[in-house]
Length: 591
Image (cartoon, rainbow, N blue to C red):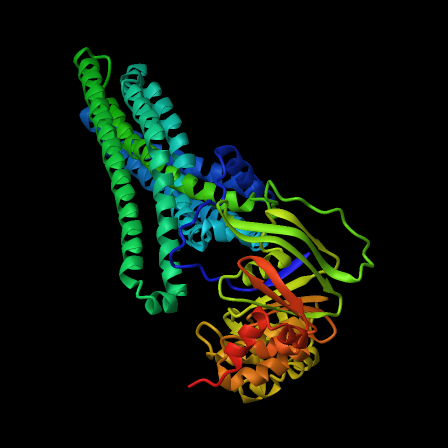
């Protein structure tokens, strides 16, 4: 098991190479059925209510046709008033049933969506960080925000249309057949138009909607990369170049959105053509029946009203195909996260045979190699052992591969070649980007140990010298921090990360420049806090300040992805090699 406490920052120039998986229709159906478990009685009740509401809606046009015949036949006011009361009663019953159906539908839909959201977030938190980083954080965030919102918006429209309209169509056809079978036959002319329109749309729309959602994920990735790497963008004057990437990604979204709108307009045009055909067919049949004394004006009126009432459900059913396609594309992306494997090994990685658990090494690395891209190796031939109570400092030039090696040991990435044999767990990685969650300070501490008492929280804070920090806060442990709460300084945030480490109490800690952002005024305090936090456990420190290396049991010098020196601080200074050069450059007076 590897625990990772870090918040990765995407390189502003990075473009995601591999997407998170997208589920197919079968997988989406299976996941929705899973979410419906325990709610099938509510679903059955909803269907019955929607059928009854639509059946009540058929009473009004039938009664109105009866009124026309009553007037035409001069049958008297009593019959007309009776039919009028029936119309009013059916309208009230239909409205009441529809209202109940809307409430039950909302309850069912929101509970199912809540289940899907919870399952997606749970699985997302278990995904290997390498998978998320390759896909780009924008991909995962857009699935948790844009795609969930799209489904939440579409499903309340799709569900009533699919259930209510289906039964309205069936009942209306039955009603028209009761009036006269020839009215029902007249409507058959619209079926080929609808079938062809839907087949064309189902073939043309899915790839467009899928591409639109993917383009939105790219846009989110570029925006988030720019915001998170804003200092880098400004420092290297990359604003124009990165702004161009955001603009290009945004125009991709616009292009696919326009293609989707063109498809919609062409689809709606086919539906309007079907409406004209249906009305023409009923008028012609009605005229022929009345002209040959085979039907009445009231029956023709009822048939036309039935059709006008039928047209809305048919259009709703076909129009929600548009919402359904978009929602299914988003559901496929959501379910893709839910069903994504939570552990993955690179295909060419060699897994070592496990060694005895009583090994003196907490971590043992053999012939380790790794590359983010095949033709650009980052690490090669790494041989390393980390003792169970040993403190090792990792130093080297920027880009030497120090952070990559730390991430590999922590399990964030999988080795390309060689092996990493872990004999102690969990292994906790803390970087300089410690995230402060919106909530109280207590919440931010107990997220690593939900059962921790206040006494344990205070003890952890005292261990890392952060007790004074809490006493200065207006509400102590209950002070709201992060987000809309009190902003913590860089040093306070890094003290928080070290206190979390103490609470979790892992046998192995990896600190990847975890105190690098606090500034020189807090450097000494944070160095002492780090000493206390890693006391009694194996520790690998990616050293930002060589003062941290000077107090380590062993120093490893990494250059160009290879270990070039290792030994104690004094031994390496005496060797007058690469470490001695780094030490001299670091320790000389700054002007």
